Image (cartoon, rainbow, N blue to C red; front, side, top):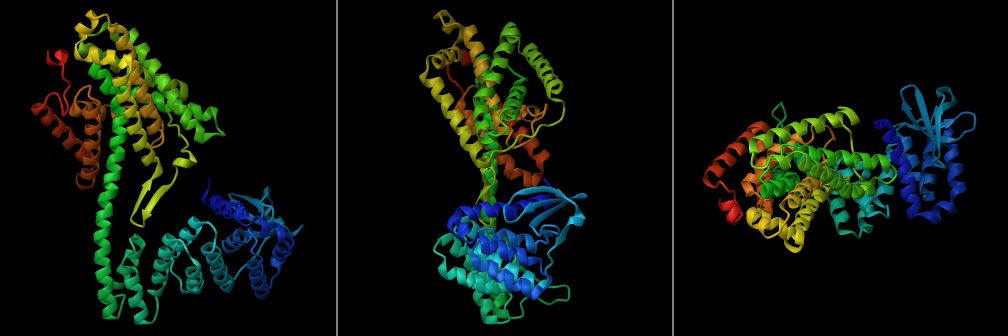
Length: 546
């Protein structure tokens, strides 16, 4: 979708949003609004100004979208019928949408439409009315975004509208944003006392845009002058700016910590299946990354099968990816790995060959090109805590998802008969076999379980990156590091190892660079294993002691 098309769609979306908020008003005043909008084709700018004021007085839900299109220079009328349309220019085509009915009219000939022009005075009037509509909107989020937009574009023309909205505002968060916006506007006042009051009003504003505005007051220009001539205002701005810089450093640490935990959650999902198979079976599975890849491709296929239910498709993809990757895991264990127990080098080479086969299989079926997976609406966007810190929803969901998967696996191992058998085989395979446990069956199911969990990791990774044949290769080495560092076969150790490596990696990258940071982490893990060969949390039992 082109940027111009998005610009066209935004006003139309506002029609539907506002129509839900003012249904009675819309139907009651359809005729006056339609008549007034139809008269915008006049060439008189003074007449247009009166019509714009009259349109604003109707309180019709379509007014905001009409004003936005007019301000953006996208409002036209069809010469033959006089219909008012919003036009999106793409290449040589004019795509028209009826402003009154929000109906897509498709491509129209350029010569069949004429633009409704505006001058600077009308643009100023439109900006003020759009701000008034947004700041008085019943939706709290729209009012909040409107106030934040004024911080980014503080203009004196908006001050009366903002102060009128501030008197009526009841929501604490929106009111705070409006106060900050008013202070940002007053920074451009000619009265030094007002500028001083404005600076003090920005003291609690944790916003990067506010920092930029204050820096313009205190920084020296090329000719040696400063933006703020009054020393009191300048000193106050420097004090507030110093406080904001301290807050910015704190929130930067919080942001890095969040991204570190997010990376740790991805590593946890990628490594937890490997911890199960490596811990129980002692198999170095180089095809583990391809199990992740299969889970990601399963997500892609499920979305293709459910194009009209993207949000639900991701939920369906979780068990589907587990089954697909788990089935592949069982087939690999029964057909290849079970003949190579006790021969780690040959197992490593065999699974590496299997990984190449699976990659080529995916290339043959889906082509070598990356496949984008659509992020559902409920995972899109971010949770904006303040102007300095926002947390993306997709990473938040993945953090909770990874912890939920870990919890389910722990319950499976502790509270089910299969988990009891798995732990018995882990601690002493020979004794478990002599007690009647079918260790071969446990091996196959364990390998399938570990591969299935890897498939679930692929579902999560599909929301962070494109799906491609080499997706799993980016995580196989990190997964082994997490497992070895945390303790082979120990899920708690896998959690601690994944979070530790994820956080350290995110804090080290800005200082050392991505490549050097990974090298140093690898060196640290190697040195750590020299001191503690069994990792942070070593399993106990006769088998592991041998």
